[in-house]
Image (cartoon, rainbow, N blue to C red; front, top):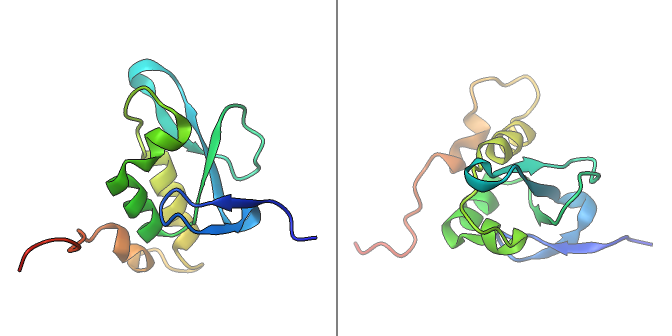
Length: 112
């Protein structure tokens, strides 16, 4: 048996839940932040995202985090971005070259 399938809020592709990072909204009011939940045990409504900087950037651009978690305001994405950056960086590298995609602005839809 394969297990549950979830949809990535970034690329909108379906994948096994074990291939995605679950995250929840923590805090309240002006202190909302997205908290990674690698053990899938934190309370509250959760959403899923591929551990890929491109999916993270796409979800930010589409403003998908607030919709997926039904948030009344804008949440701080710092903890989730750091979790993805660490998950993508290969062991033994400390310069962050593996996470270059998250720091480059997208050129999609820009006129020439």
